[in-house]
Length: 491
Image (cartoon, rainbow, N blue to C red; front, side, top):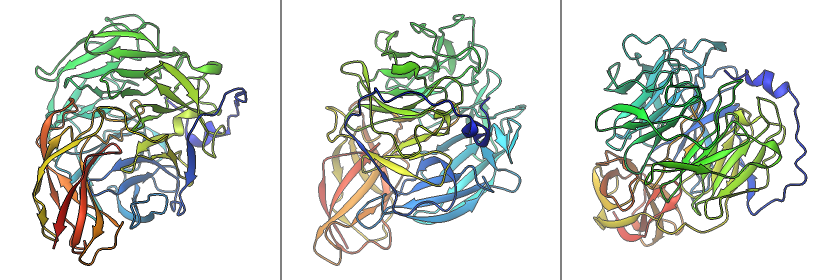
């Protein structure tokens, strides 16, 4: 269990980080800051960002960040969009945008209305494309007494799997107020772990407890075909801490390997092909991912927020380079080193920048070094080149349209996955559109959620009724990486 944010920020455990070199990359504050203290973020299928008020007077409130006419989120604008059902105002919860694109599910909460209760409350949000989100209550799986800050994941076949924080249970969402039980974990319980979708369709979880698989180093693997968990290979060193049973983020890299950050001063790399772990770099100056976020950049490096062991202040941002298996310090946002690592949230934006929130009213984005790692680019194969304003269920075919990773990670407390296609249209002239202006279609109902390399798939997309007639460069975007372009006519 983590401290309340207000208590933790009052703790001052600053690290001496002046010896760390600052690598390439810069932070830019939003020109229009949110109207409240915000935290968890979700990528909507129309290019907007859904953000939760997490430390203000009402944590049941949600906001939307809409990019400006050129696709800039730094210059974006905020609007209020809906409120969770009465009595439900959680902090640290499961969250997913469903494969239908029109619904978002919020489940559980370590805190509700400011009290530590590990609630089973939940909500189902209905998304109006380019409009608001409306919320209704959603019942927990039958017989569950807790959900709390438990993890969740969308599987390659589109099913949404939700964990119970405090047991070995997990269940598949089967529609409003309906769930189907999954097989139980091999270990003790789900608490503080994370469900990480693999490119082979399986799910990996590193345990934060001593289990029958291993006293200190166990991992587990879900076979999604049989819905059964089994012991995975042991990590080379203990990654969870003995005091709080915390863990850091797990990010699937473009090459399919997993980079797991420890809540101890360690990291490890999992190779699903050999089904084995190897040692990752040791973070400098005793830094740990003691509940901490990470996100992968289009260039393949992983941006991560780290800090001291425990929940004290002293954050430092670093980049992991899998080619050299090394960590390098990068510039900090304004609130580091004052923040503890657990308050951070990171999410890749469609334009390749990474957005950072920290339960404050000050939001920044990180601009990584340019370039896209080889093999990470989606490929368009076919689409109609004549599109009608306001048309629905247009079909786009391509390869690797979901990207190769969930991309954004934290652990059990926050899920902001972006492994699904967006459709971005940029005006190139003609008609009534302004050259350079960006519009996002609304994507939904792709035939697969796989992140396997070169997977052939399709997604449906709807055009806004407000898009001007003209010629556009159309791209599919996944986790900040844009595909090749095709020229389409919109009229």
